[in-house]
Length: 374
Image 1 (cartoon, rainbow, N blue to C red):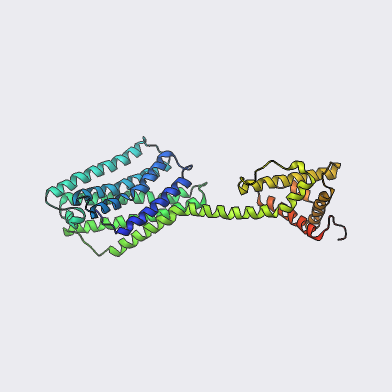
Image 2: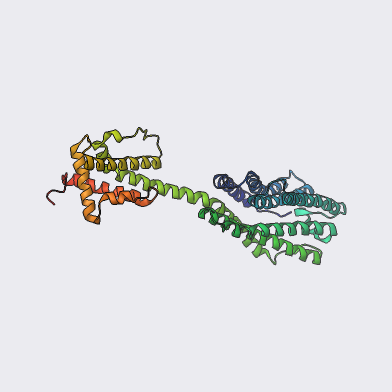
């Protein structure tokens, strides 16, 4: 059982909260239920060894049960991580490969219990209390090496797979980057476990625990793993929220800039106003509605010019016509040409209306209802 510094528990709690929020927000609708549950078990399972270690330090758990539970607690998130990969590949809990993976974890846990009890029965302490003495006993050494080897294989099997998986077309860029950063954390943890495996082999050869030679690499790997986990798991959520806030600011700005065109158009054709409760509408919905009303007003202005249809305010119509004439003089084509080829989903759609709104505002300030006098 590995001794974990007290601060690691608090750090992993923060990471777990990040992970739960992230996976619920970003992956809930992108993966099947099995993969979703596996990821949640993995996230919560990473706290297991720290909880066992804390209980041992508090004197709640004796050394032997703490050592056995600690090894099992490390195996649970590793198995869950493997199931997460299989779930993303479309496999269900009843799939033969999934059953094999879960079964291997159960067999490993059972072997850990049996081999640990055999070691203790021989009078050899295990875990933190033993200080690595179990490496001098065949059963204890077998248990430690089997656990380390299993974790190394599974962690690298999942960590390396993330990169080609997220390279598939259709993966959102933020999700791709976040998962790859988290994968670096997984691989860093794989390095840490590999160090443990190497030191375990050294201990078997020496007959006792070997300390110090690979400690800097172990500490560096743990720092990189924790940092990458925190950044990778939180990045998609934080980046999405940041992008949403920036988009909302842009939409509010466009909403305000459309005001002159919108009010003038509805002054000319008030029947085009759509029922709305702007106090409760989100800004993107308000912007889409205002765009629709502005284009409706432009279409009615076109009918007004072509057929002489009725308008509520002649002054408002003249102001709109003056803005359209200035637009034509600036671009060398009529507004109607731009309206006819517009793409409602494109940013140019808003840009066209904003430019007309700015022209209406300029004409209002200048007090010019038409292009006379220019």
